Image (cartoon, rainbow, N blue to C red; front, side, top):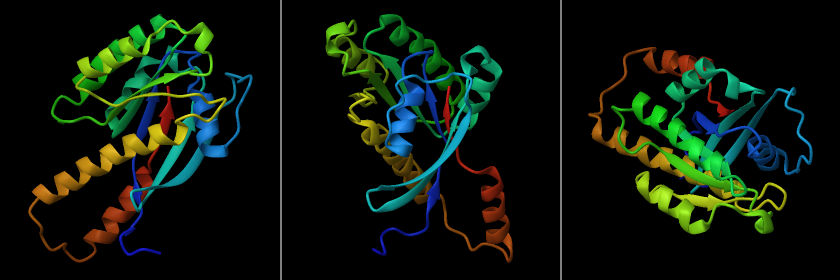
Amino acid sequence: MSSRAGPQREYNIAVLGSGGVGKSALTAQFVQGIFIERYDPTIEDTYRKTIDVDGRQVMLEIMDTAGTEQFTSIREMYMRYAQGFLLVFSITSPSSLAELAELREQIVHMKQHEPNIPIVLVGNKADLEDDRRVTRARAFQVSQQWGNIPYYETSARRRLNVNEVFVDVCRQILRKDMSVRKDQPSRRPKRGEGRRRRDRDKERGSRCVIL
């Protein structure tokens, strides 16, 4: 194993979007490598996956929570604690893209003291090209308006760009994390402090939440 890998990092990622855009299908394809043709919205499951991002190990805990579109308080809680975001819409639904604007505004409001929020815009269901109602040009325009964030078109059915969107947002988080650590003055930890921090981080865990 390369020495560059270093200790495993754990991050919180929230996957946001309106119902029916394929958030759970993307998650199942990413974690299990399977396509769910018909997703039962009553099922709740939790997944964990370790991925390699530029030679660094990153652990994601992915919690697929049913019906959370109806519970804004739950959504806001995960927005508050997430470190990165996948904003998912369907290329067959202009309204699903429009609804992301409000979600992004909530994120920016909650993270107003944090520059460069890690966000990826995801246009899902790219395999339904004949039913496309959101042009690539329109999606790129939105991504530029939102701070020139990355935009991907994905297909859970064909596993198109599924890994790429998760890796991209993790890469943004890593870059931001390393920048913050570089700017912080180094100090020698007190006895037992490192263990307490590790225990606290372990209890807190990392989650990639489907909302």
